[in-house]
Length: 433
Ligand code: XLS
Ligand code: NI
Ligand code: NI
Image 1 (cartoon, rainbow, N blue to C red):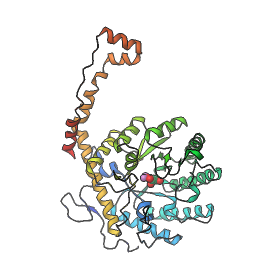
Image 2 (image 1 turned 90 degrees about the vertical axis):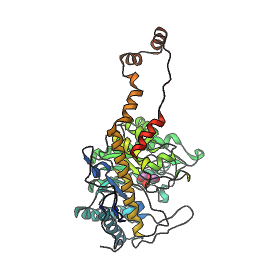
Image 3 (image 1 turned 45 degrees about the horizontal axis):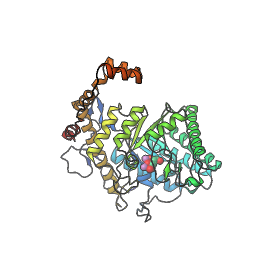
Image 4 (image 1 turned 90 degrees about the horizontal axis):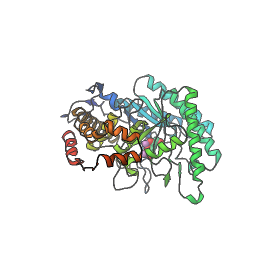
């Protein structure tokens, strides 16, 4: 036991009227929605990197947080794990996620880093056996260390490709060992700064082969979780190959991976790509590659990935509406890829951020369920496309341009524009949020 969160009680569901700061007003794990417990709908995960490893820096200033576990020793890594499980015990969320670099100190050699990882994975495994959350996903940090500055799988240096592949192997082994339900790849440095020094074709081919290797290894070790790619359009690289869901789908098709890999979609990354979160979710669902979400909130002005905790219920409601329409999560979940602001120094800030975010998501989910159960939005959508549910339309699609031409002449087709009814539909949404 550490005393980092001393005096902060375990958070419990006390209902909407509760004024207890560290209580849930909306997140009630046991509440049944559409025949499923709320906890099983949302599948919340805490992210090790933002909550325990991030020092509070921004592009203009360094560390603001002082945490007793900051440092590069195994003892401190164990203390960090202790504190993590103390936060988990307060929150009672069912999952967590990590990168290798979040949980173990970097060693002097690859072999030493791997030994450190294995040791801390055993330590975390023991803590998991004693109760507490499960692993939603593991991943490798292939972007912070300077060796990755020109890319990991897309590095011009084959040694970096090998180092990255070896790192991913060790992280997949760790994920398997801890019973992780997914393995994530976010290509932080898989892109480029300038075309003047970049062989774009070759780099994409190497990234494709790398992902094939990941899938091959998954089958080799019998990992039955999902492999998830997390798209992001830029930052840190100026141009990133995994720009958005549609771009990644094209990439998966090129390398024959569209039935092997799904998407981990992040709110802030969708915004950076000029999309809405729900657009990215609907796109993945329509392509059959929806997997999991990184829940956060991006600043609409700043132009970089601010990774704030979500607190906009209407936005979150529209996101969960798409998640529910996609059939809900299977192996995926709601990972808070979110960090407190750098001025939020207190342990209480970290707890409150998660509790607030879980409540916002619970409200969004409940609104989404109510929207779906009312059926009004889906009825309006079905009506809008009803013309396509006819034999005539079906025959037309099977024909060609000439058949369409014949049909338009024969039946004197003259389209009548119909209202899209956006305001009326928005009014329906606003009844539920
Ligand atoms: C960074 C990404 C990262 C991934 C995991 O922008 O969101 O945190 O989720 O590597
Ligand atoms: Ni991100
Ligand atoms: Ni993320």
